[in-house]
Image: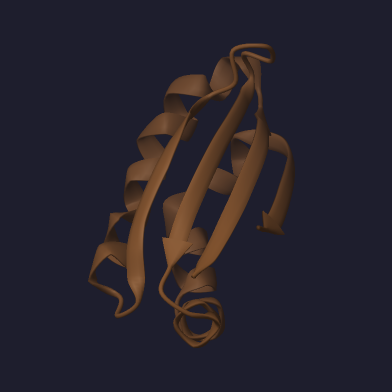
Length: 90
């Protein structure tokens, strides 16, 4: 299993938009090997959104990254809502 952790520092005036645009990622539910995703706001840093996604295998995750991620990201409009992003695999 692959667990991907994403932390975004969201602009204060973009909290609503970030949340709205996050729903654009629902299309990953249909990708083979995608197990689920959870997320929320950091209690200690209220402008930090944390998302964890779960993948069956590195192969499934890599297919998503190579074939689908960039298009979903570009279509979401989310890139204008945060100042920094940190992505890691656990």
